[in-house]
Image (cartoon, rainbow, N blue to C red; front, side):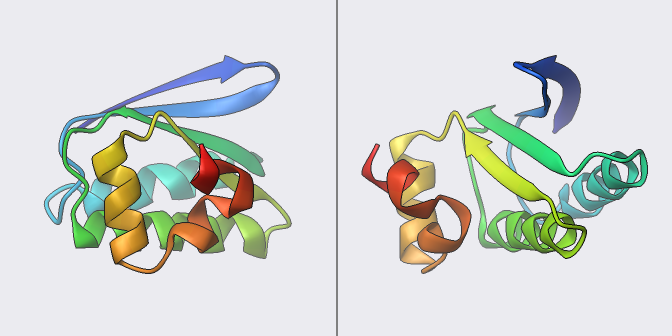
Length: 105
């Protein structure tokens, strides 16, 4: 998996490319820690380039959300395809990671 950071509409965006599975969770969470340590409290993850979202990837998304919320921030997901949305719903975490408005999209 590769990571690319950018700023869109005054919001920090982390673009992910590649499978989000057990093999990349550690590097993803390290990246989240670095972003939060730099002062970011409002982060968007662009998952448009993620063809596979595994259970460990879902757990890592929840951990990232908890890290940001513990510091008064928020995590926003964008670029999810139907399979990723289905994975989140099947894991029972879509309401935690997407909120009402994004689930309906």
